[in-house]
Every structure is written in C-alpha cells, then in structure tokens.
Length: 443
Image 1: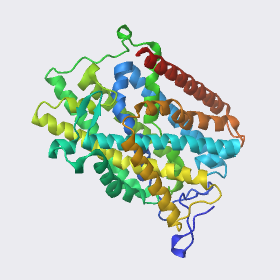
Image 2: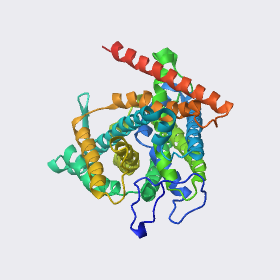
Image 3: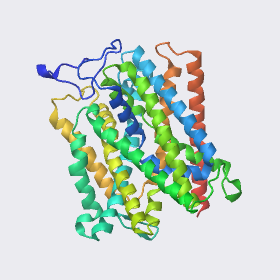
Image 4: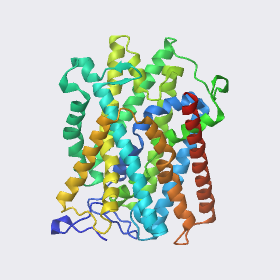
C-alpha cells in the first residue's frame, strides 16, 4: 500500500508504507541522522539508571563484555528483521510475524509490544513523578525537586505535577503523526543522556581525586553472597536497555533511503554502548557498593553541600526531561500495535482524527492513572525483561529466520538464530528462578 501525496487530498496511513524495491531518497524522506537519534532514544530509557547496579553484581570487566555481547546479538536480530523486510511484502514487525506464523504470530507480537511499552511508559511517568514530587519507600521520604525548591504544596503534589507534564509536555508530542517529527526531541534526549553521563563522570573523577571513592571490583565477588545464578539477573537489565526492535520498521518506513537503516542501527548501538559503559563505570565508581537499583536515589542521599545539591538536582531534572522526550518514541509503536490489534482490517488513516485522538488520549490517560495508582512496579519491569522483552528482541526475529518462509536464510543465519534463542530462553529461565528463590529466601 503506497503513501499518497498529502497535497492531493488523499488519505495517508499513520505508518507510511515503503516499497522494498525502491532505494532512492524521496522528497520529505527522513535523514539517517534523524533515524540514529530516534533509535538511540528508544534504547536509552529508564534502564540506564539500573546499569551501575549491574556493575556491582558482575564487576567492571564482565559487565563490559556482557554489554558488547548483547549489542552484537541486537545487531544480528535487527538485521534478521531487515533481511526479511527487504525480501517480501511486509513492512511492519507485525506483518513479518503474520507472514511467518499467521494470525497467532501477529497477535503474540502485539500483546508483547503492548505489555512491554505500557509497562515502560508507566515506569517513565513514575520516575518523572519521583523526580518532581518525591516518593516514600521503605519508610523513608524522598522529597522531589519541586518540594525542595518551593516546599510542600497541593500544586506540586505527585498527581498535579504529573497531570501538568501529561497535558502540556507529553500530549503535544504524542499528537505528532510521523515519528520523524520527533527527531529534534530525540536529539535533545540523547544529548541529555550524554550530559547526564558527563556530570556523573565529573563527580566520580572529583570524588576519586579527593579520595572518597571505593576501588571498583573488576570481577564478581562470590565471597559476599553473590551466586552464579544471581549473575543472570543482570541480563534482563542490559537487554531492556538495548530494546529498539519495535521502532525499526516505523523509522525505516520514513527514511528517504531504507537501506540506511542498517547503518543507523549500528551507529546507534556504538553510541549506546559508550553511554552505558560510561554511566555504569562512573556510577559504580561514585557510589561503590551502596549503589541502589535505581541510581537517582543515591543522588538524593548525597546532598551535603550547596554545590552537591545543585549537581544532584541538575542530574535528576535532566534525567526527568530525558524521559519526557523518550516517552513519545515509545508511545508511537504502542499506538500502532494497539490499532493493528483492534482494527486489523482498517489501517489508521491521517484523515481519521477522531480515532487517532481517542487512541492517543485513551492510552495516555491509562498510563497516567496507573502511574498514580501503582507506587512501585520495578518487579514488573524485571518480569518484562525476562519475558516480553526477550521475545521482541531475540526470540521472535530468530524464529522468523528459522521458519524461513522465503527460503533465504543461510546456514550461518540459522545457526545464529538457534544460538540466540537458546541463550535468551536459558538466561531468562535462570533469572526468573533466581529472582523467585531470592524473593522467598528473604521471607
């Protein structure tokens, strides 16, 4: 289905279709730079805050190795998707799954996308609320930035501050129909992530200069209760941090030259590897073994001077703005998949404003209510990392290669696909068993 010129009054689908045989830059086509920023933004989300805690468990060297391994397998599985997209008529992830596994495949994908993206977006809004209005965990009250600056008032309560963000920051961005329209917001988001890394690095180097840092462990410390099985619980955190597969087709569809997508993914992976290793190493160096699963809590606990308070507020506020800019990119694929699930034979057209607005506002309202009602969903976040995220990133793309409906998979492709599935299923099962064992062991 081709995209008609909007100047002629024709109806254009929400997700533009691209004929796989064409490779020429069209008028209005997105640039590779915009694609890089959008892919990177989709990766660098809430997971970046948990990266330093994985360094505490694994040590510096194994953490860096795991980051490289996962980034390699992400590149492999994205290439699997692009290979089958170029060889057939399918232009979305859902169509690829339907092509290989029928209706069951497309529904399974859409359910996984909805669970993953809804959970991630709720977490984003919860973190934004924590930064702005604080929270209370395990009997300890953490004040938000607005409460520290202006005191505790009704207008800087969690519900009201999040409502302001939803209506005046998120909703205008969510009403943009083309994902390429978010390229500037994505660029700012990536720069904020780099700014966050730079501040953490500077604080860690200063702390090391004055002798306030601990010597980071290079390898796991099995003498202090760390088991071999607990090492596998870090895999879902890293995997979630590299999730970009559901955004590959929407971004590719708007590229002026679709063949640039592979290069855009590789550049984005290099950028994210650098960001994750830097924030993981310097965050662990700065806080040592006291690092929390959500590093923003550590910044809240170390305000012992005016300069420290300013730096900590800057870090937290920049991260909250970063999540606000990541939110629309994640929401885009969620909205498309929800529409495909409930209206499979009626593609959402640009002229159908009512349906578009109902989907956008309905999803945003649900996410807002959930973020207010649910105090902490980090266990759910870990559950996603071992189930739906693994399916979207590794199991589904590899299954498409093994199914091989177009008979184009090479022997190397099938060996890699089998290896990816075995590793994904194996590490997920071990991580789930380890989490369950730890949970009941604390009771």
